[in-house]
Amino acid sequence: MSNMGVTLAMTKARARRPGSNVVVLPTAAPRQVRQPTGRVGWEQRGAFRRENAFPREYIDPRRREALKLAKIVREIEQTPALLIATAIYAVMTPENRVKVVEHLASGAAAGLTAHVQAVAALRAMTGTVGEQMDMQWALERLSETGTPV
Image 1 (spheres, rainbow, N blue to C red):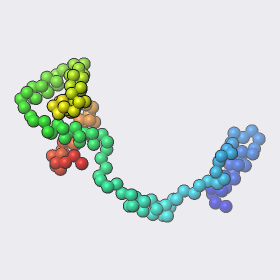
Image 2 (image 1 turned 45 degrees about the vertical axis):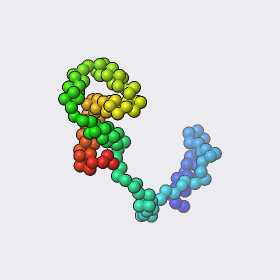
Image 3 (image 1 turned 135 degrees about the vertical axis):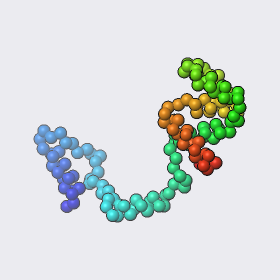
């Protein structure tokens, strides 16, 4: 008898003891399922991975989002007016920043290019440390490859 059979038999024996807190459910399998471990399992898992390889490089979803944002930001033409506007936005209070984004959001939702670019630029300026690092990675990747993915 294998170890799994012994374990199952011991569980059933414990369940028959008076005062035992072990209960064998009526829907339980008649025996434990043998998992493919060891050399055979390794070979099977390796074959499965080779047959079902991901066709592209895996990129974390947060970094994929940063790539999209970086692509939009790179398309923005740098002008003195843009530099002045971003400087003003940088010194605003968080409450005022929210109001600015709310003002631009309706145009961005409608798909107006200038509004989409403005919201992307503001999102790129503000964010957590992790978002800023992802944005930096995305900008570097775009400058190396020229394409987001």
